[in-house]
Image 1 (tube, rainbow, N blue to C red):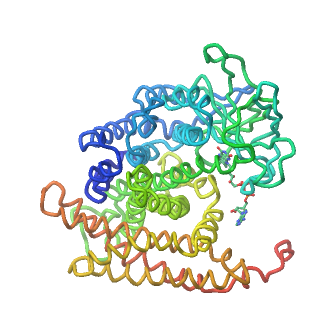
Image 2: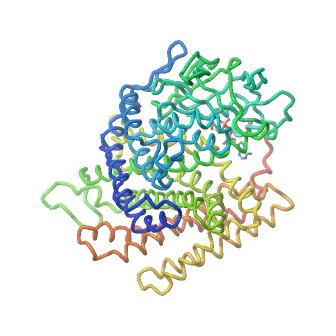
Image 3: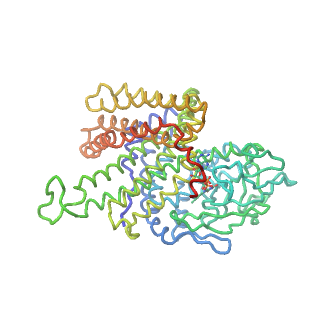
Length: 598
Ligand SMILES: Cc1cc2nc3c(=O)[nH]c(=O)nc-3n(C[C@H](O)[C@H](O)[C@H](O)COP(=O)(O)OP(=O)(O)OC[C@H]3O[C@@H](n4cnc5c(N)ncnc54)[C@H](O)[C@@H]3O)c2cc1C
């Protein structure tokens, strides 16, 4: 089984070399995030990932979470790891100091999360949803709820969940029927069934705080009639807020599933469970979006992290497995066969994985940096960061989970037959990665969000914010003898992207299927170009630092070579996407629905 090593060097390169994090943190209102602090957080974060979380990954998959008589027990080692997570204050990095958080930038938190996700993505489910709940409560709940619940969620004494999905209401949350009846004391009694709730029950913490979407009496049908409630597993005593009696939340089963087996996926029955309104009556969906937007960035990172694990496993194997002779000539004459890394086709797979994974990581961190900028003293900078984040969130969630899955599958291929055998550990990454394009809003939903809501809905304004960044970079690189080729490609793509978007918007005025039918291809096109922008930024930083420290040279030279591979062999995927983006929706819709039952 391949050992996992947190990609600390890559993360450091991005924060320090590419995005100049310490200046950015200073400007964005985080004076405490000094270079020393950044380095300490990343170094210890990598140790935590390698030493505490990584050993859980395969064992957790083999053992899984267990349900018995309404109670979920996590896989061996998970409880102890959560204790260490809590003691190490890993849940409080970016949280508000008013509630016990460390007040550090969220991009630093997400950089640490990237390393943790790669170590054990099933564990990440609990911590990620807890942080998402923190964001939603802080943004929308009453002061009283914030004072009581935030410190104990931020300290990881308790964990949080996100309860949207019901048997008949998945992508369409407007269909939910869970009811919330007002009680005399101002609280609400919730009744209904939620399915697929990640870490809906477990033994990691003494209490679990569910954020639940429900409907008040008389609420209108659809998304406008939904409200958000905080429902604790155990109610608190009024006098001292100590954990008191069990609330009416019953975990009636957990799902047997393809991957992330150590993450319990629960059916939760709310039986007149007492809850407290978060935000306004009927304003639940907007409040829940605070949590979902955070979770979407997190799931994007989960996707890339499985690609990272697969890349590490595939690289190690390709450097030890010998089969046949390299087409270009014998490489190891003293041995009967060459290493498989000498075969051009194995190189194709490894570099595809490497260029997608490292490019994805850069895009995830670039998006996370926009989170920090929302604290910038300048209003215009804050507004621009909000726009950028709105635009990038569906790309990070959708594209990174698609290419993360691709990389995880390629990892199996590099191992050949052994990759298909459980013992290798490689097939687990592909199984674990497979959920990521589905949950937190399927990638079909992300694609529609990007194209129809964000791009067409803003009349291109959100796209323009990103294209302006591309334009600035093109101007910086266009005179460069080494990187001029990247500037040329990006300049052409920038114009093409804008023209394609206008064309789709125009076509969809008379027929919305024109946009819906190309939305996924548009998401992928956007992802390839956004990652090309990130590779150009990485190339610029690599070139600037090359030759400074001999110990960095191989790393930096490899960045430049991988960038060239990306531009020459991955970015051309946009050529076929351009063709499909121009194709009318007719071929999709003309086949009669009944024809699929023939
Ligand atoms: C392991 C796991 C963990 C989960 N964790 C949670 C959790 O913690 N909390 C929670 O609330 N939920 C959770 N979910 C639920 C998850 O978010 C949903 O499964 C997901 O949102 C899709 O909903 P659905 O499964 O009902 O699919 P459906 O909504 O039925 O979708 C089926 C297909 O139709 C497509 N589709 C639907 N509507 C449209 C549209 N308008 N345009 C284009 N395509 C469309 C979808 O893209 C998909 O391909 C989890 C699910 C799993 C499997």
